[in-house]
Length: 185
Image (cartoon, rainbow, N blue to C red; front, side, top):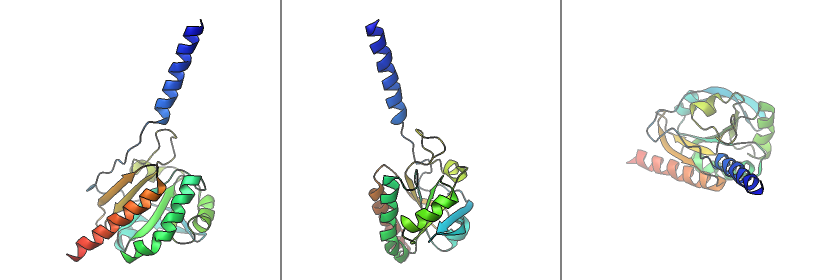
């Protein structure tokens, strides 16, 4: 009896571990056409509309998906993107964060964590999350930590997925700077 219980418990633990470690993946490959979408966003605590097509007319877009506003990793990532916003802007890029959080939460997050430097979009119905296949396997309806750099022609030029929030900022900034350097040659 004890051996069966231990075996059953081990099966449950292994099953749960497999669910938690299921990797999601940045489904949009480099060269893929990025889906266009429009949704509410917040910048410096003020609600506005974010429209991907309009944003791309102004230059490349760094679209980063994050799981939950005000969680530790997402706040670290927002602070890092805020600090790097001038470097992104110097390369002509706009940074936009997006999660399933509601717009009221994003209003606060845009000021407190993003330090009024860039917009954060609300995707409460997970439409953009699904379109970019950025959903979390472990927490359906929420986003994984996935970042895309999208060129003005709407093509994905860089995709990065991983749990290190600082690496997202470093890698997307490098991708934007590399893109800008190629435009000059």
